[in-house]
Length: 493
Image 1 (cartoon, rainbow, N blue to C red):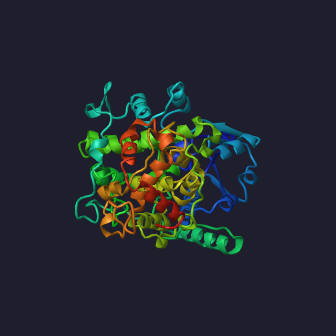
Image 2 (cartoon, rainbow, N blue to C red; image 1 turned 120 degrees about the vertical axis):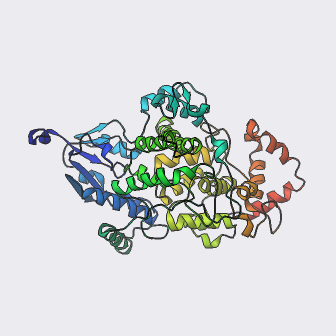
């Protein structure tokens, strides 16, 4: 690029979740990065999330023609004409629209274009991941053999729901390559310490060594390692949990993708290439691609397609506040082994995989009737890969069923039997997953029946819950179970 053309190019403002090369038009494109302290004043984020975001910003600032501005607010830092890719939150989009001299470009970092999603979604009474996923695979020719899905089946979930291996305390897969911190990480940690000490900025969770990529190079190394070493084992125990193995065979790529360090297309192409080369089974590759092309794109588009008020919907009238022990990640207060271990994982790593999120944390919140918007905000703040767009439909719609079924066909409520089948937690727990009443009663089992009883009328028309609702009336101790769970209140189980 000549000096004359460089002079005519507006600097590209990159938000902290737009750090990869696919957010630029050329490798030489000049960049503006803004480090805003006001972001951390507004919410108590996980300490490791704050570290990861700032580390990624500052590492990116060390590359190429980049101007890093540290300011209280984004608006203070914008002093020249800029271009910016469509941000990932309504608040950020509103800010961009208010700032003079800033041109907003279409979104990047996702596979499916907004107009394509709108064309697919308009006129549908219910929006379902499976329908969108098939559309997206056809549209982008992913895992397709001509007009048919690879292997002749669209959905291989049935092959990916095995419990953990009996007697195992971890999966026999290579661990992810460790991240090596540098002087930038040291300075970030010192700054966060000073913010807490001098500015009163609060965080949740424990500090710790950085566990996730903060640079493009680190992210690519993780992607290569997953595709070659972990993807072949990913599928069968995709939904399983082991207390001694928080990573299992998961990719751990969501923080890097959501920071914009990886383009989801290159992630998808890596997984499909491994399948085509015969180095990864179709079920595992399909299950992983479903997470990226399916859920990630689906949730992103729902954030914008649903009305702004969607984040506050509450069809099940769940109005209880999050208890302090949960909000503060106090795992030591919890006696139920599954919940204690998963909450400790959030406290110590800012990350647990999708089944602990949905079936341990979200399931418990759903059963207890906690406010969906508060649960969504907690996930946003407490997870290193959490953003408003990520958590709104994921938590409000799917996990808490607060939209009454607009994007999910049933509430993800389950008793202790599910956790017992899919994990090793119940064997060493003080509670019995088969018991719903008394000192040994599993809070998930008792909570499940309490949830169904409270919402029987609202859920009566859901065909997927017909049998459980029929079983509800065969419980001779239901009144005692309901009284027990009401008395539990907000106490940690």
